[in-house]
Amino acid sequence: MAWIYLLIAAVFEVVFALATNASDGFTQLWPSLLTAGAAGLGIFFLSLALKTLDVGVGYTVWVGIGSVGTVVFGTLIFDEPMTLAKAASFVLIIGGVLGLKLSDRAAEPVPDERPLPEPVSA
Image (cartoon, rainbow, N blue to C red; front, side, top):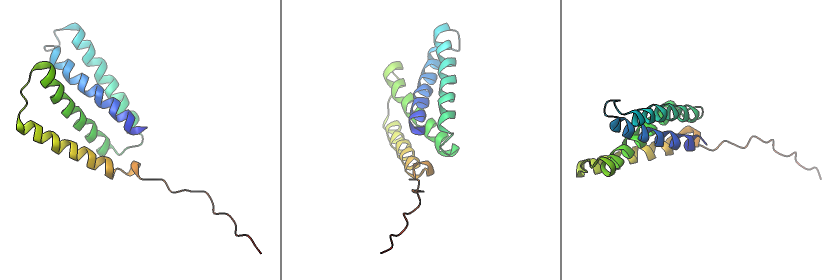
């Protein structure tokens, strides 16, 4: 469930960044309110994820997904240029996020703690 919370937090991180840009220095009411709400919800869901995940892993993945999502949607919504360097950097960030996910201790299986059955006497 922690990874689901982290993905939700990352979506709010992207909304936060895009709304901050749209707020025009907090001079536009609705984007400014969306910025504040998305920031609060993003941190709330991040805190839920960090109950289980290591802070180094959780925060880094949150920022990584938020960064990639912000650049992708910034390109689509605000017509920001997409360059080969940006695309290559995405690949590196996504690789790092996947590496952290695979190395996270919370992803390791918990050993079965049930006692072994008693041997049957013949």
